[in-house]
Image (cartoon, rainbow, N blue to C red):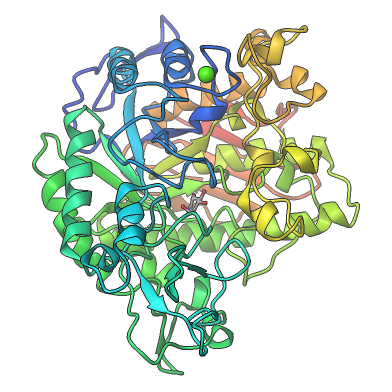
Length: 577
Ligand code: NOJ
Ligand code: CA
């Protein structure tokens, strides 16, 4: 019988039983599969067109059958939804549009019953302009202690009607907005104008977030995903650099040692003091809470965010930025493994999330790469606008192969709702129905991220809203072609993407052991071949031609393997023991 620390695989039952519902394993996250739920687009239980917590509870069985270890919920807090909930008005409550705290407790309990842990999203860089502390700051006026909790500065010019710097915000347009009190003051926002940045040099801010962490820890969550974890602490001392210099320092180059410029807003060393204080809170729990940083920083800076004295794990988005290319994958995998050795954390693999074009669609476009852009979505927007068609078949084939590659690697994998259905990005949302501030702030220049946030199709065959909710229309329009990807259809098709994911997640529990891999020498050009300590092998053929299949029993393959050949653009797991 093959075993792992929690649960047990039974060959006779041929199903995974999530036997461990005690949640005592402190290392559960190291090689976990974590399923990201974008709550308002997962399942609408009360028919108002918006996904809700009760909807998630109703799908506990689905998540169990999929075989995930945990779910991470994108924000479900009270919010005006100017940025899909990442504009938080109250960190310790549930948006009434999504449910109540009682619904949250019920959801945590139901998921625990089926062995699925819950992680929540913490958004510490900024809040919503509806947050009571921001409202108080505007009201209290210039020079007040309330304003100190945010980043207010006087405007430039005689009438102070020009922003304090020429900085741009991440979503396009200026990074400063007038205070609203007609006093010549402006507040800084890294994202939308509805998202004022906190002043992390203020003790009230630090204290309040510790309170928030304990609030959710006490409600039974197992961990946190930390939004824009590399921002928070800023150096706003004068003179502030201009935008032309700052904007050169993105992703790979936030620290420009040669030019002596350290980014005043991002990836500053001081941010790790904050996370040390968070770690003390995490360790108040038994087992300790875990956290994963969303930190778009250069590969050689990533391991700092994964330190055991800090958050403990960080996303690496490097594999998400790779083309479907063996060389790029190998380099990224080697770097990821080295970084996790340094930090003593585990590697993380991500191909899709709520901020990027779904990978089944990304891989259906011709290869593109722009190293200066952290979120590949910009590139694809250009391709769509240039009328480039998506090759859906190729996209899905490559997506399945890339997914089996990352699931075969040591470390944890984060999957995004709908990717288990092979869901494509919805590119055809009418302008009037788009919600993303990126679309709004760029005046349609960029589509933004709504296309990967369209509510999931649960049922085909004419079900209202594809089974997402049986009342009002889904809050983002679902296209007709969703029928093909509906859970009801894929469930009964043994060759569906959904059943591939289920099988892979189940088999992976045997594959995972020591967090190591060994490259098998002699793989042809364009082919990756590695062995895990338990003897299983993973082979990815990125080329357009079939290659010889190495020896071993096929455990799973992303497209059918025949006559000793590994087909084009396919991953296979082999076992030789
Ligand atoms: C990263 C989140 O993933 C994204 O959705 C959000 O818009 C920004 N942070 C701002 O919170
Ligand atoms: Ca609802």
